[in-house]
Length: 247
Image (cartoon, rainbow, N blue to C red):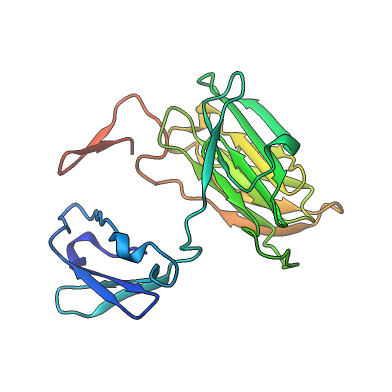
């Protein structure tokens, strides 16, 4: 959900029993918002179901549902050479399978694991991402987009992650400077630390193409090349309000 920062004035939190909370006093001019959901609205049938954004005159700017509002319980596991891993509690840790074990240019070790979910389904986790496909519900056969990849960043490296459709045999990463790199998913997952030579503007990842086993393009996905704070840099830029980050 996004709107120009100067027009953000109200945030409405719609709850399961049609209770609405309007909080203005925590909004700040930098465009950020922090709200602690009351304890009374953290239990089943009382959790938030929708967010609505208003301007100063009360006009609705944007509205979107809150999916999977039930919090997923996690546990922390440790493996040699990796940072502490946040893993879904429903994942069968003893039956885990590691699909990727890679190194970023800063030396960080990047992994991706899958495991059966207790009650049906599958869970995966990486150094930064985690998800279960069914969260205890019966397994459903649903069509998946060919590409479900995004950035994981904000530190000393940037990673491409996490899901692809079952028919995808190869993903081609295209960069602003013309370089192309082929990536190969495993069991519907992909994680890849982007080379640091592609962090500067003008050289960044700009597009992904998904190919099937016959070599036909199934989907194209444009990637943001101007997201502040995503790619590391030597000299962060000051944006005001005490915010300084890489352009």
